[in-house]
Length: 192
Image (tube, rainbow, N blue to C red; front, side, top):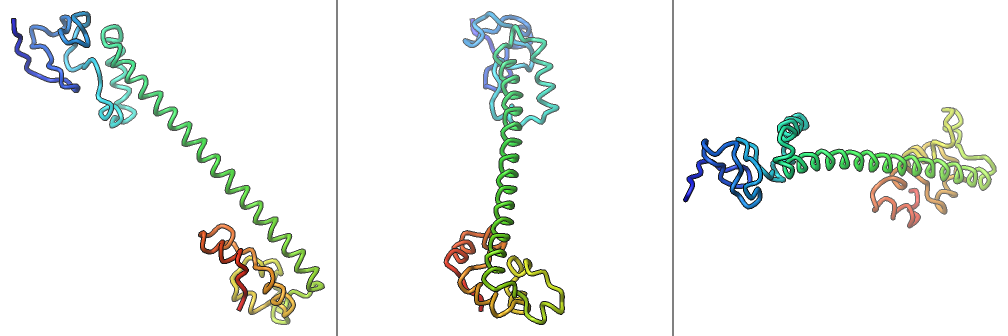
């Protein structure tokens, strides 16, 4: 006896005609042991599940909860998608925390390097790091180590400029910038 199926579910199974609704499903996946509720497929398409918003996923969970014994696979798929999203959120949160920690570590290392270079330059220049214009403008000596080169040219003493020629300044661009700027810094790019 051939049955005529009118509608397909999300997997492409034909849903039994109205007279077969709420009766055991003849598909191999159900094997006449489960009822095929109207518009509630046995299995859900993964793309469909992933396209659902959180509220739509909750609605699906509610629908499958009512038929958990008959639609166990679909119910487990919905629960699996909820778990996958929660796991993805945890991974994203952990990834952001690691990135933040790396940034803080790099920032701390940068500040330590600036301080170390400032101490070395102060020792090498006998404390004469500002020219007369820098002294009149009350410039902070440490700003010469991280600011633009134009600031160094305007306010650095000849001793500090000479020191910078042998010790590249640890600028933010050289420390945090592109690989090109880091290579230029490590290659000992000189002022001037």
